[in-house]
Image 1: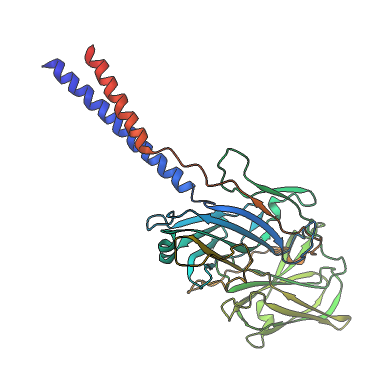
Image 2: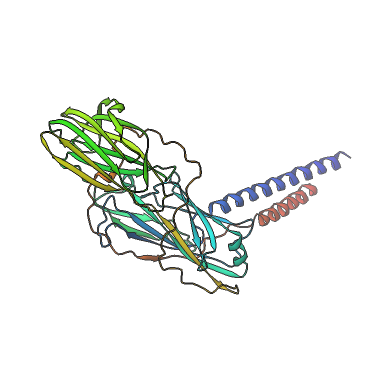
Length: 418
């Protein structure tokens, strides 16, 4: 009786061990499966300079368009497997959070794409239409997005390798491109007026603007700043004005004091003026505008003017960075739709923005943009790099379970002989 009880206890422990291995195997396969959704089905990546078409090397503030090609196997998109994502290389910044559509030739939406500037990820959610077409076809196409250089991750003036992190089926190094990006240059020593902008990272309906006055630290009598927004914008929020002293690098600075924002007055929804008085120092004026056309125009202008009784009037017109994205797809196989050529660039869709935007915070007291730096260089023609096929699939957790059960049974038989 005692021997029988011991055997049952041994068997119970071995079965428990088998179950533990089964659960562990299942969790591991889940983790591998989740990770594989990054860059899944991507077949190519290419880079194009939109600011300077023939630039080589690239300019530090150029608008860069990255185009990804993809090919989704027949039947791969299902109700339970309808999401994938692409991780942008660390050498780029996504300008803001927004969504865009990937459509077919009949303007049916195949996937909704959403950007995340924090994780540098584009998440694709495939529609019911895509699921129905995937049942009988493989789906092939491309999508593109406008990005900016992340100069913190680039060795400017030297060769930088961009690893696209694309699927690798043969154990080889994932494809990459080598680029050269010119360093950002400092302001001109006699600069009296400069202006730049950047999109709010969380809401592309908001533009942050900065006007820099008197970088040269010239004595100016009765310095007055006037500003006019171009079409499809309106002023929001309050002004934030600081007096600064720049370091020798022309980028970093020390804050010497603040200016009462009430000295700057909104003359209308699109214009304002402010009197700085007699000055010898440099001033940074921060404010925000809201896009009133939902982002359809993509690029937005602004004119700033500096006057003084002892200087020549200085006027600067600048445009915002551009953000855009779009994509197309075609079906190949037994489906009803005629295949389309996926690699022809398409006019980007107007990005969809969040319905309830949050009020933007006061910008940090820093030179927040490379927009103040010169655009330089001439860049190489875009090229597309071929990729290996689909990534390796993890071993089935069922195989682990079967192995665990067989092992347990063998151990039980050996223990029984004793």
